[in-house]
Length: 129
Image 1 (cartoon, rainbow, N blue to C red):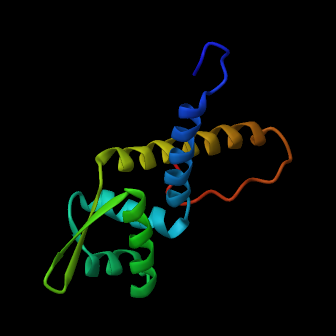
Image 2 (image 1 turned 90 degrees about the vertical axis):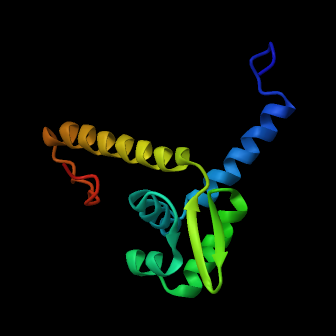
Image 3 (image 1 turned 45 degrees about the horizontal axis):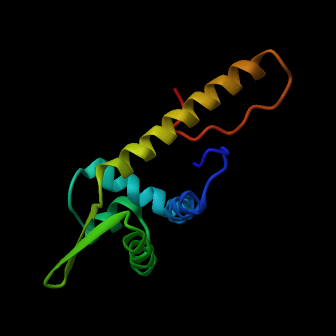
């Protein structure tokens, strides 16, 4: 930021890059793939990802291609096999941090709504306490 407190052009470029990176992460199937990669810790065969996620092979291939282009994952071919890995552990840590924030948000909202007659929000199973 410059002295006026407003982002300068180079800051905006960084925000654009961050926006594209986050946009790539912002798809439920890609988040599912990232979660599977985090749980497996390290390189995972694409066939294993298919079993873990239940995603059809053509869909997995398209999502991995977009994720690789954005720098979320790296891939390695060995013969006819494809291996996938998080490009950096911080991606997995960021996903985990967002889930913790969502869990906290759901808990806080539930506590506030407990005293009112507002309908409860549907809570994903990975958020439930």
